[in-house]
Structure formats: C-alpha cells, structure tokens
Length: 190
Image (cartoon, rainbow, N blue to C red; front, side):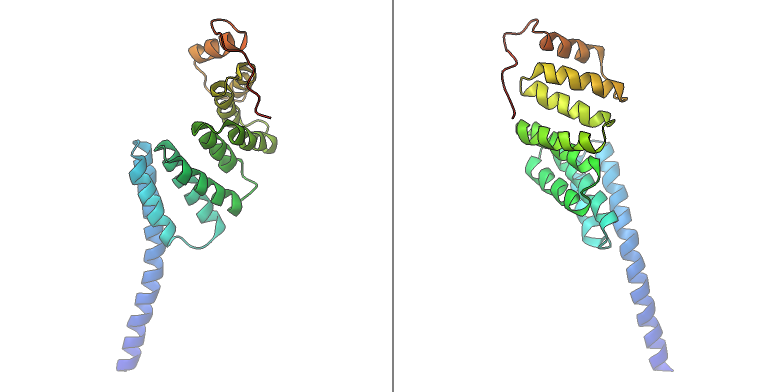
C-alpha cells in the first residue's frame, strides 16, 4: 500500500511538473510581450530566453519565440543577436515572410544595406502585398542614398496599407526628384 501511495505521488509530481513547464513558458512569453510593449526590450529578451529554455521542442513554438526575441534584440540595438535569432527562425520555418523582413530590416539598421535589401527582396517575392517589407526596404534604400528606389518602395508600402506620414512622403519624393540634395542616386547595391 505504501509503495502504491509513493508511486502515485511521484506520478502526480511528474505530471504536474510537465504541466508547470508548459504553463511557465507561456507565462514567460506573455511577460516578454508586456515588456516589449512598454519598450523594455532588454527585459523582454530575458523573458523570451526563459521561455525558450522551457518551451516544447516543436517548431511552431520555437519559431515565434526566436522571432520575437530577435525583435526585442533589434529594438534594443543588439543587432548581431537579433540577426542570429532571425536566422534560427528562418531555419525553423523558411516559408514565413516575417523573419526575412525583420532580419533584412536589422541588417539595414546595422548599415549592411546590401544584405538587408537581399532579405527584403526575398520577403517581397514571397508575399508581394506585404507593406511592411516595402517600408523596411524603402528605409534601407533611403539610408543607402538610393532615393528613387526608396520613393518607389514607400509608395508601394502605402498602397499595401502602411501608414506613412505626409512629411515622410514629401521628404522621400523630394530626394527622389533631386530637390534640396546634392547627393545623387549613385550608390548601387548590386
């Protein structure tokens, strides 16, 4: 009788431990999102890391956690860590646009415009109506001094639902038409 009671207690502990892990990783994920939403990117990344340690070893869960932790790193200007997480997310799911778009934007934020545009081209080829990818690519072209390409992408971003301020539209248009700038559209990525 005593053996049965001990066996049942051990079984209950094992079962409750597996439920606790599943609850705990989702709790960490929820906390991470809350930190992200209030611009506490370092804390968000920490919470995503804890979630990754406990999450089931299944692609659907891991993809999202790496993607979101990559965003936290990127917003926190930890670009190399962000690029690493986006790369892992792409390895888990090479058919989702978000990881390519975010990695491309992060490359461009780091000043690596060619790599950024390459990933953003891929995202746009996968989903031609993804306004966010067009916006990111417009910003990469703009920062690389390719104002005509930036202006074209910004117009596409607006067509596909991105909210673009009038000031930004005017600035991109002005630079694309060569008004108010001495810089020519001479920098070529490819």
